[in-house]
Image (cartoon, rainbow, N blue to C red; front, side):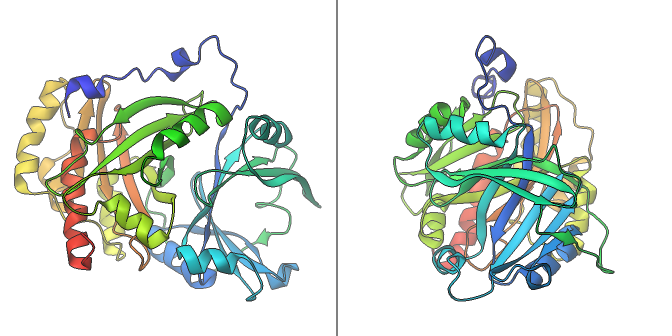
Length: 386
């Protein structure tokens, strides 16, 4: 990817200078996935990804409708939820979409105000502000719909000292494999349908006060067979970043089309999680059975020094070691980044994870797009969906 494409004004504080941030967001509070079997999924995330037991809600806590396991690794919280009866509407979501992200919860100072601000600007309400209490205090939550059936939940927890939320208890387990070094959610990517990207870009601008600070079209993101378009949305302090993808015309079916076919609509495509030592993290994940996309060809790594030299950066890591693990490298004026992508983590070719380490770079690996998508296309070919 050329220097011109990557030389975007990343100074979000300057973009927002003089403007009132009507929706101040403190960070990602949790990500809730609806899954077919939360107990087994929790074991997978602990064993494979090194998450730790945090909290639990189910029959033992008085919840007769669903069961939820909360797992944590550093600042990342995952909630895995399964319905307990055929009457629970969560079943409809599972039948249609399979396992996937339902709620992207955002940590706020004032959940009621966040809900009022966004619904007054056109957001469809998922849940009106609700005060939830127990002996540890109170949490206020409110939610709105975004693309597809995905929800943004606003979580205000400044008056709460419990494990997670009221209705949950501490989940004590003797089985907690070592963490693999995952630190926080760097960004989350959504896939939307044909010609819907700009609609949702405008929605994030108008409803949530985000800005589009980086864009890629099908001339920049394409292979011999497929293409897509993407725009990156960010809130005022830059803590929340949501790239939005849509398909573009190509000779064959793109990864975005494949996702939309199997998820049966728009949804979260992948969760990017940050680490301070990607070599150790990826080595640990591979040893635990996590499957990654196929390695880029040798020619890709031969070209890396020249790409770094273009921005006057020097690689601190052993490129041969990165190559052996299939970790990709990209750079911008600020520095470089290291990234790798898992295969889908369920049988439907939908949700996957990205592992990323930023060495100053603020971009999203634009220079890796071609190699990445060719790896995905090799998997599509094996699945017969290219």
